[in-house]
Length: 82
Image (cartoon, rainbow, N blue to C red):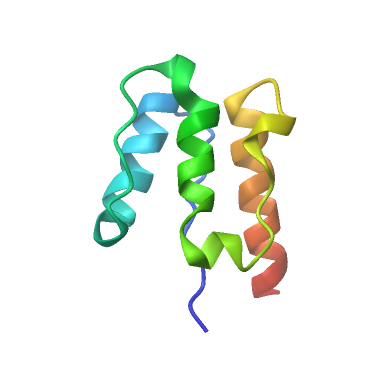
Protein backbone atom coordinates (compact mmCIF):
# COMPACT_ATOMS: atom_id res chain seq x y z
CA UNK A 1 0.00 0.00 0.00
CA UNK A 2 1.41 3.37 -1.01
CA UNK A 3 1.37 6.17 1.53
CA UNK A 4 0.55 9.71 0.52
CA UNK A 5 3.33 12.26 0.86
CA UNK A 6 2.05 15.65 1.99
CA UNK A 7 4.44 18.45 2.81
CA UNK A 8 3.75 20.51 5.90
CA UNK A 9 2.08 23.73 4.70
CA UNK A 10 3.31 25.83 7.61
CA UNK A 11 5.79 28.55 6.63
CA UNK A 12 4.75 28.31 2.97
CA UNK A 13 2.46 30.32 0.78
CA UNK A 14 0.18 28.36 -1.52
CA UNK A 15 2.42 28.56 -4.57
CA UNK A 16 5.54 27.29 -2.78
CA UNK A 17 3.63 24.47 -1.07
CA UNK A 18 1.90 23.49 -4.31
CA UNK A 19 5.28 23.47 -6.08
CA UNK A 20 6.59 20.94 -3.56
CA UNK A 21 3.52 18.79 -4.07
CA UNK A 22 3.82 19.04 -7.87
CA UNK A 23 7.43 17.92 -7.63
CA UNK A 24 6.52 15.07 -5.31
CA UNK A 25 3.82 13.84 -7.68
CA UNK A 26 5.53 14.61 -10.99
CA UNK A 27 4.86 11.07 -12.14
CA UNK A 28 1.13 11.70 -11.73
CA UNK A 29 1.31 14.84 -13.91
CA UNK A 30 -0.19 17.06 -11.23
CA UNK A 31 -0.71 20.47 -12.82
CA UNK A 32 1.20 23.53 -11.66
CA UNK A 33 -1.27 26.14 -10.39
CA UNK A 34 -1.06 29.46 -12.17
CA UNK A 35 -2.35 31.57 -9.28
CA UNK A 36 -3.28 31.53 -5.61
CA UNK A 37 -6.93 31.87 -6.59
CA UNK A 38 -6.95 28.37 -8.14
CA UNK A 39 -6.17 26.49 -4.95
CA UNK A 40 -9.52 24.70 -4.70
CA UNK A 41 -9.45 23.56 -8.32
CA UNK A 42 -5.83 22.52 -7.93
CA UNK A 43 -6.71 20.65 -4.72
CA UNK A 44 -9.46 18.77 -6.54
CA UNK A 45 -6.82 17.70 -9.07
CA UNK A 46 -4.61 16.46 -6.24
CA UNK A 47 -7.48 14.39 -4.90
CA UNK A 48 -7.79 12.70 -8.29
CA UNK A 49 -4.48 10.94 -7.55
CA UNK A 50 -5.42 7.48 -6.36
CA UNK A 51 -3.40 7.53 -3.15
CA UNK A 52 -5.46 10.52 -1.97
CA UNK A 53 -8.77 9.37 -3.42
CA UNK A 54 -8.43 5.99 -1.71
CA UNK A 55 -7.66 7.53 1.68
CA UNK A 56 -10.63 9.87 1.88
CA UNK A 57 -8.65 13.10 1.75
CA UNK A 58 -10.67 16.25 2.57
CA UNK A 59 -12.55 18.08 -0.17
CA UNK A 60 -10.91 21.49 -0.81
CA UNK A 61 -14.28 23.03 -1.67
CA UNK A 62 -15.32 22.66 1.96
CA UNK A 63 -12.62 25.11 3.13
CA UNK A 64 -12.30 28.87 2.81
CA UNK A 65 -8.51 28.96 3.09
CA UNK A 66 -5.94 26.80 1.33
CA UNK A 67 -3.81 26.40 4.45
CA UNK A 68 -6.74 25.11 6.53
CA UNK A 69 -7.41 22.51 3.85
CA UNK A 70 -3.72 21.61 3.50
CA UNK A 71 -3.37 21.19 7.27
CA UNK A 72 -6.37 18.90 7.33
CA UNK A 73 -4.89 16.98 4.41
CA UNK A 74 -1.71 16.44 6.45
CA UNK A 75 -3.79 15.32 9.44
CA UNK A 76 -5.82 12.87 7.37
CA UNK A 77 -2.69 11.27 5.93
CA UNK A 78 -0.92 11.12 9.31
CA UNK A 79 -3.90 9.34 10.86
CA UNK A 80 -3.44 6.53 8.32
CA UNK A 81 0.24 6.12 9.24
CA UNK A 82 -0.24 5.81 13.01
